[in-house]
Length: 232
Image (cartoon, rainbow, N blue to C red):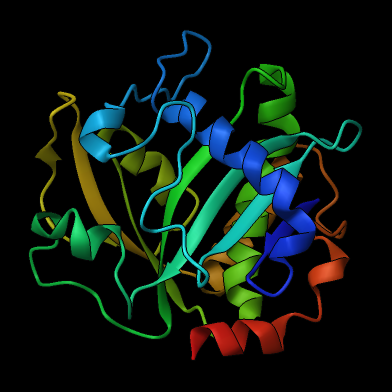
């Protein structure tokens, strides 16, 4: 199941987070022939130390969502959420992607650093289990949190259409812009609404998974008060 990590339970997940930061570096800053979304970013340009992706936007307020292998416990996927009321990637690093200005709203959070570890799973397991479950978990986390109505994000333009298939109520925040890596990126806002829940639930069904089976770890079911404190 996907697990929610906040500042209130972070100590419990300290070893897991260490693995996540190393895993993020391998997926984002080292080209992987087996990684279909491999980006090969320049760590020096991003100010990232060798082998460990942790930056100014990994803070006490950050919420992490991780999906672990049901048998080995290894991280297979992770993503982070940051409140747009404070510094975040689009406000501090990529403001030129937001034509109408930077989004600042306590009910809108930025998602970034989406990583799948293809060295720890087969393509069949990714397509038929991890991806549909993790998409559903991301949507449910926001929808059920009580304080995240929408998310903003930046991704390669070639991945934009696939995101529309997951979160239909999505609008671009500006025109695509090319980065130093030669790829074009686009910023957008996606509503975490009932339609997004319906689509990601359908994704579970299409993969042959039981939509009634929980995709979020039950230990985190009572964290709404913690979420509210973070959001405040």
